[in-house]
Structures are given as structure tokens and as C-alpha cells.
Amino acid sequence: MRITGYRTLSTVQEWGRPVGDANGVYPDGVTSLPIVVVETDEGITGVGFGPHVEIERIFAAVEGEDPRAVTALYDRMLRQTFKAGHAGQVFGTIGAIDTALWDIKAKAAGEPLWRLLGGRDRRVPAYASGLDIGLTDDELVAEYQVYARHGLRAAKLKGGLDIDRDRDRLCLVRDVLAEAAPGQRPGLMLDVNEAWTRKQAVRHVGELERVLDLIWIEEPVRRWDADGLAAVSRGVRASVATGENLTGLEQYRPLIAAGAVDVVQTSAVWGITHFLRVAALAHAHDLPVSPIGNSPAGLLHAATSVPNHLVSELQDLHRPIGVAIDLHVEDGAFVLGDSPGLGVRVDEDAIGRSTRTPGGGTAESPNVRPERAGRRLLAGADGARPLLPVGVGTTANHRRRGP
Image (tube, rainbow, N blue to C red):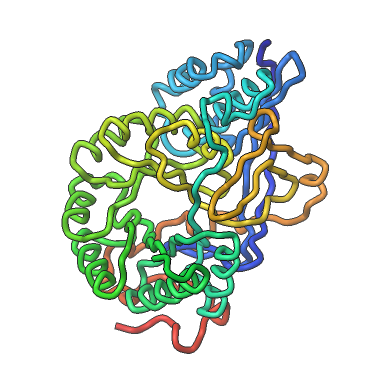
């Protein structure tokens, strides 16, 4: 079997509500999902979710190769970008191709990928994560009631701009989860997407911990700030979770060496081989791993085979346009199916018929860091970007506070 070509596609996820974080919000709730399809001379194709950046140059490293040599091909792709570097979206493209190759390998073996990788249990524990910073209180409660009906008992909220609001919203979600499972303590996490300084993080989390028991605080300071993340971890009761934006083991090593990470995360779009290597590195330091992202099918399969998987992020319960995945959610877990490979089917005709387009990289996008991020005197003041455009999703008692 030989790799002969690739196709690139882009579809969208329709959330049906505003989605975003401390950096910005998509008011229409439409986000993009790039797809890479890798072709072989035997008619078996593999699907990977991730960027298409520099794909011609990266694909040259695997063209004509046997796709079943997937881990060796992953290293060939890294070497292909040696001079320019493999960070950011280039790393995502490598991850998308890598995931597609794992898909091919498992399809050729006639097995679901979780079985091929050595998994024993097809169930992958999940937590709810609604990218919910733009929701009103009523919308927030309604959203997490849906998660609760699927058995989820842990939730991660977006925050970091207004500590009073963060506390109130965490309490609302805590009550939703507690009502759904009387006698069980809900798990709560807060993700501030690198919005704070070290001192702000310790002060703000300390204030939340007066009334709440947080499992973790996610990305409290910049992703590369090993000393700062370690200081936060020492200064609060909650664990520090980070790593979704790190690319390559070389970026994890200084954080682990500094005691800067308690829950090691990796992004769904960075690929399966990367996740397996990060999981092994974390396991060597007795640290748990947790996959992040809205299209985590590859990492869910991989999570079944590592000894230190803690929990995986469940964002939207709906599928992107033109994408079907052989898995479902019940009793608080992803349940993987028996379809060979990833169990992903792409309907290119449905994608072609769709007229929906994502909001893109505007100044209000969650992917654009605000000018004063990390330089606000008070959370919720000092020129911070509004959570939503005026009149969208705000409530009278939760408008932005002044200084």
C-alpha cells in the first residue's frame, strides 16, 4: 500500500448560540473545521481534522510511502519542516495527516483504532465544556442541563474577565450538576485562556476557592511561562492544567521540569502520535493527561490505550456539517463504536451544499489576543474587551462592570 495523494476540505460547526472565551466571542456560533483526506493506491482513505497550512511541503515527506509506517512518517514530517519550525498551524497540518494515516492503518487491519492501539475499554470519561462565556445565566443553565442529561458530572467554564461573574456562573453550573446526581460532588474547572498575570491568577483563584472546590484552573498565565505556572500551582489548591497550545515534546519538558503543570493537556488537532508521546512523557512523571478540542475522535481512540488518561473534553453534542462519527455519549462518557479506523465518514456533497461560513479571524475572535490581556488592573475593568457586542446575550445584572 502506498500514499498517492490528498484532498482538503473545510466545513463548519453550528453551535446555535454564541461561543468563545476571555479573548473574544463568535456571536453567531459558527466555527470552522478544516479536514484532510489522505488517499492510497488501494482505495483506502484516511480522515484527519486540522489545518492545511504548508500541506504541499509536508505531504512530500509521506508521498509514495506505506501509510502503515505511521510513527516513522510522523518524524519524517517533523524533519520536513526542520528549518522553518513545526509550531502553530504547521504542527496542526502534521497532526491532521498523522491522524489520517492512523485511520488508514486501522482500516487496513479491519479494526477500530482504539482496538488497534491496544485499548481495552471503548468508554472514555468526559467533562462538559461549553465555550460559554457569552451566555446569559438562563442560557448557561439550559446548556448544562443538556450535558447533565447525558450523564456528565464535571464541567469547565470559560472565564477570567469578571471574578464575581465567574463565581456566580460556576455556582449555577454546580447546582445544575448536583441536582442531576444527588449525593455526588460535581467537578468544576475554570479556563481563562492566558488572561492573567501570576499574581492575578493566585489572587483570583484564591477568591473563588473561598466558596468553590475547583479541580483545575486552565491556562492561568501564558502557555510558556514555566515559572509563572509553577507559582500559580503552589499558590492555589486547584491543579494547574495547560498544554493544549504546546507543540512538540521540547515545549512540555521545561514545564514538567519546573513543576508547572498538574494536568497535561494536548490539543485534538495536534495528532495521535503527538498525544501518545506526550502521554508517555507525562506518565514518566506521574502526571495525568487530558485531550482538548471539539473534534477529538483520534485522541479519544488513543486515550483508551494510555494508563494516565484522566478525562476528555466534550464541547458540542452536535456534529459538524457533513461529518458523521461512530461514537455516542452516555453516562458521562464517549462510547466509541466498532467501525474500522476512526469511524469518521465525510459527506463531501453535504459540505459542498452548505452556505454557512465561520466568523473568521476578526478582532473579536477568540483566536486574537486582546491588546490589554494580562494588563488589567481589575478583572472586568480597565479596558477589557466586551464579552459580546452590545445587545447580544447580555443580562441586566451581568453587564460589564466599571473600574
